[in-house]
Length: 147
Image (cartoon, rainbow, N blue to C red; front, side):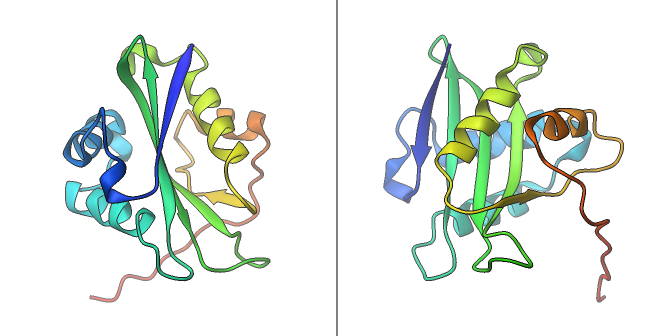
């Protein structure tokens, strides 16, 4: 059984530090990982209390040890862009295939106000899980990087 901790403010880190969250995500996102600096920026955004910003970090513990992390950010929009974006979800490698990812996402959705979107690589095996939970592929994301 997973036990959850919800972090909405910097001072709410108790059993797991911000640095441990960054390291966990960087390690367990595997080939889909971002740089630690970018993960830290995502945490900064989730912990903002400014209008239109914010979100939360959801820690999932199994047998009193960190098994998974999810970060949800508010988009500050609604309608054409959902109110929330699930930015990161990672489950420790030895806990995959046990339903932890699904439980973490469902818990996050249950405490989130408004619609949720996420970005997923086409070759990410978790794409099937997201579809089983009810996420639908509405758009293909395209990016232009200004250099």
